[in-house]
Every structure is written in C-alpha cells, then in structure tokens.
Length: 370
Length: 112
Image: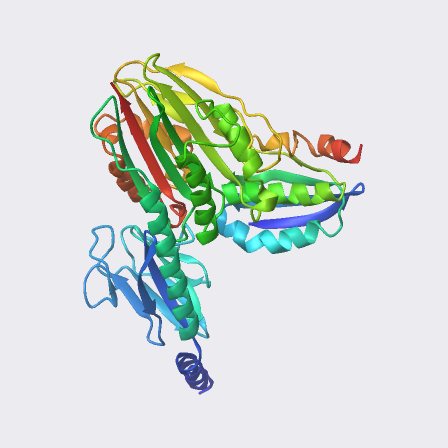
C-alpha cells in the first residue's frame, strides 16, 4: 500500500512539473544551431534507430532501441537498452541507470544531447540569442576570403563555427606587388563578444595597414596588435594569432605566432611537416612586448596548413585527448586525401571526436604553392 | 573540475583537479576568483592533477595573475604534467606566471 502511495505522489509530482513553468529538454545541436529540442515528459523518451522510438536517429552507430530517458522525482534517469555502441554521459559510458544532471551531455552514436531545464520564456529568449549568434556567425563568415583556385598560391578552407561561436577568423591576399599575407586569429572565449573582437581585429588586418607598422614584418604586426588590443580595454578578451608573409620572388616566408600552436609547412609528398612557430605571448596579455619572427624557404610544390585549436583539441571515442601529433598523423594518411580537401578533415574528426568535445570553432586553411 | 583552496606559509594555495576546458571554466570561474582574489595574497597554483587547459582556462589564469598583480601579490604555478606544460609553453604564459617544478620552489618564489 505504501508503495502504491509513493507511486501516486511521484506521478503527481511529475505532472505538476509539466503544468508548471519549467520543463526538462534534450537539445540536439548541429554546428551553430539547435537542431531539435525534445521535452521529456512523465512517460519518458526512448532513443533508437527506428520507430517506435520517440527520437529516431537513422544512423548505423545507433541501435534500434538504444537508450531510455525517464523523468522521476524531477530528475532525468538514463538507462542503456543493451545497445551495441553504448550510451555516454559527459564522455563516460554508463551501466545500469544513471542520472543526467542539468547541463550534462547525453551522447548516443555521434549525436550529443544537452539536458536543459527551462521555462518556455527562457526557451524563447535562448532562441533569440541563438538567432543573434547565427547573425554574428554569418557576419564573420562574410569577412572570410573566397578560396583561390588559380595563380601561384591556391587556397582552400573549411570553417565550422561552434554552437556557442568561438571567435575564429582568418584572411589572406596580396600585400603590395610581390608579397602575400595569411593570418588566423582565435579569440579566447565564446559568444557574440568573442566574435565581435575577432571582427575588430580582422578589420584592422584587412586594411593591410596598422599605425607605424611594416605589414610585411610579422613581429611588428603582432607587437602593434598587442598594444591596440589590450585585455584590460577589451572586456578581458585576448587572442592568439599566426601571421605569415610570403615573398614570391625569393620564396621566403616570414612568420610569427602569438600564443598559438604552429602552422605547418608540408612537403610536396605530404609526408614531412615542419612546424612554423615563434614563442610569443598571447596578444593583449601585457602591453609593450616585442614579438619574435622567423623565416623559412618554401620549396616548389609545398603547402601550408594553418588551423585553429578547435581542430585538434578533442577527446576521441577511445577517450584519448588529442594533441598536434594526432592531427599530423591523420593528415599524413595518403588514403585520406586531406591536404586537398579541408572539409574531409572536419568530417573525419567529427566522426572520431566525442561530440561534446568538438565544441570550439573549427577553421582549417590549406595554401598550396607553385 | 574541482579546486581546493588552502593556506600554506602565508600564501594561498589553489589545487585544481580535472580538465580546465571551456565548460568547466564557465562553471568554476566566479567561485574560483572569489576564493582567491579578495585575500590579495601571494598565490601558488597546483596543476599536478590538471589534465588539460583550453584557451578559456589560460584566460582565467591570466586575469587572476593580473588582478593579484594589481594588489602587489604574485601568482606562480607548479606541478604541470608534460601535456599541460606543452600547452602552457605554446601560449608563453610562463612569461607572466612562472612555472616551478615543486610546491617548495613555488612557495619560495612568491614569498621571497
């Protein structure tokens, strides 16, 4: 009898929650947008590859009946339905029944659902913010240069802003008669603020002009940017940068990096990766710094890979935290054809990453030289 | 991501555990700053149980160092694992927040 009463109380509690202000949602993100939002009611939800699952994901990595999400005492509980590839909460494979805390990520196959507990008004507000972020992402995208398919330097790139918008931006083009410039900026942070900061930096660099600065000297460019974009005057935001200038006549590439991992000079056979990096502080941390630059000769047929940290700072399905070495090994795989197709790099990394760890902007530029 | 604040020989010691990634920085930033900054004491950061630092983590360390610096107190780090040391080296953060191998060296540096 006591058990029955308990059940009744629980059910009533759950129903009250539905009538009340806040609901439990599972949000599925795709790139920079919320792809779908599912309310978890008192009857719970089943995720699987085919009907009658409530959330049907037609993906071979997902079992027909993959997992169940129940709502009990105002808490979401997840149980794996003996799926082949498992169910994960915040990267940990679950066994038995486990709670899904608000803000936690439920992962099935290569989809990641975030548990949100919000009112309809908050959802509306969040939709509005998502729309604003979408606009900011579109604005950044409009500043990126088109790929170049002809001429002495060809470029291809792939850019995928994260759901929270990560502050990546890049550019390239001529600098005077015989020189070419290429740069990638990554603002630390996310949201419209980081994107606005990236746009402000981009607008300076796109002018090919900074006060009292020779734009063909990467060290000078970074030092000037550091003085112009101090953290204290810019809402605590700093950024990292890689900036290179190539002289077509001498085949010399001058470059400097500020707080950023190296770009790579890749041999024509795609097997030798030379890191191009100078040890400098991030931009904006402290005024009055000098920035070191370095030079390298670009042999005919070489290419340069320039990318943001969102490309490789992932944890893969085996639980391994990737480093640059993992990325370089991937790029060296001749079967992948990655050095010709930056979108293929994204596709492969998205397949290998635990989805919630692919949470930063992804920018990858490949420049190929005659 | 967790952190524990203790007092060691006149300095604040903050021991972080886990991944200092974007999501975790969002979660701990306010309480972390509130636990360290008001004292304005020399501070040592124990990184020996930190497995990863993302750019927002670097920003948290930078702003902590600057705020303490404005109050005349130093911030140093110690115990970084090779993986974390490599990330810190890329950002050249040690130019602003020096890195030491041991707690004793770190403590000696801030209280000197």
